[in-house]
Image (cartoon, rainbow, N blue to C red; front, side):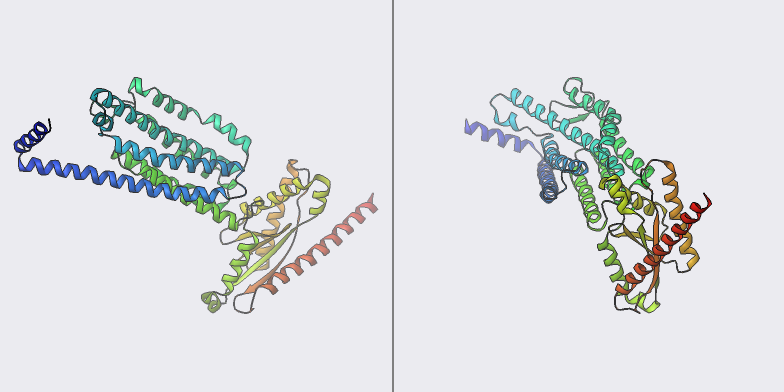
Length: 436
């Protein structure tokens, strides 16, 4: 039997031309190189996602819905690494038909595995896009109830696309596996791609149409992570079998993770403005900047204090006090121009840093913020009343060793304003009582 096999091989070899032999060897090398590239790319992506998964698991606030959704996206990304590697490597392969005695049964198993892997491949992509949209909705509003409502509203594309995939072994509408175990596109091959891209576009449009509700520091990262996914989907469509989706998902998730960690490090979660740490780092960096020292750059700091904050906590509870802090943060985020930013200094005190220097501009800004607060009070949506006291001071880079004096001047001026305001309100109340 062995002699016959060797003779058959020799006869086949003799019947092949030199060019055919070289072409066959080149094709074999090409497939071997492709398999190696496929494995390396997906293993690299898997290791990155696994690292993020371990890091993310240690976060204390992982019980929050946005953290759960992000964890689920990480899990989907890791699953995609396995599925993509398997789907790309199994195409054309005949593993079971080569090792099983019955070649027909072996080929049937090979084709079935190829079919299942490709169904998972498209399915995971669709679910990822769907979860990404829910994550974007939660980032906008921070509301689990709204996420549940949107989960029902936007589920139709996912249901239709997943249904077409689950029925695909019978219908062959999306794709089929031919007798050589080769993936072949079907008439509805665009359906999963349309579902995925519709979710990505919905996320981008939703973020930009509701950008006032999102910290402006997160708008660009939240939108930018869609770019590699979109490019990856386009490349995968143009060049079927390219091992790229898992990697671009990983790039997007790594970018999103870095952005959220930056947000947690420098953004006050309750108010949505910068925190004390960022304020300190900013002022220290500014004061040590050689170029600003040479120019003698001057900035204005405005300390904003919420009036009667203790009464809000005492009369309506601390949850309403937190809501008041959140409302002030929203007012500051949405009403400060370019080059001006706000930070929560501590408790009910906020700091605005601006390059405005003239008194009229500063007073106009504070008057505008006060008017916005009055409009909210008049809406009747809140049981408490928002009002501010403020004091401002200026700081010239290079003239002071540190910013301690700068902060003290703001605090002193704010206290003087508060005392004068209380005296003025008391006088007005007395005059009103005398008139009655």
